[in-house]
Length: 152
Image 1 (cartoon, rainbow, N blue to C red):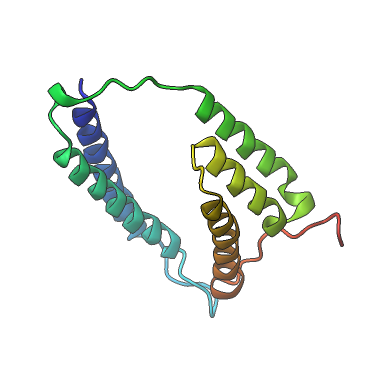
Image 2: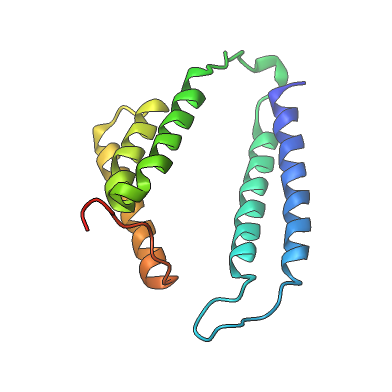
């Protein structure tokens, strides 16, 4: 099976899964606490993101060249293995050093593992993404992220 066909099948499966997940999210109960999002808020957010990304994958697979012009790419197991190792290390040390302090080297290492060579992107993404997530969860969702236990 060509990569184009695999992407189309995956996109259709994910769109179907997103629709089923969204249907079940619609039947969640209404808000129980004042000044808090409904229990269905995050499932709906996940549904919208999943359907959007799946639609993008489907559109891109339709725009891919025919299988005759596809190049054979070798799958490298080292990148996903290194990414998972860094992720598990991140999860383990997160409670001791806190979200902001651990996320910066985590994002730098993930960018390096997956081939980003521009150091300016390392700085922008490794500082921008954790700060954005911290502000989003801390101030908009009012969900505290892990703080550094070693420094308290």
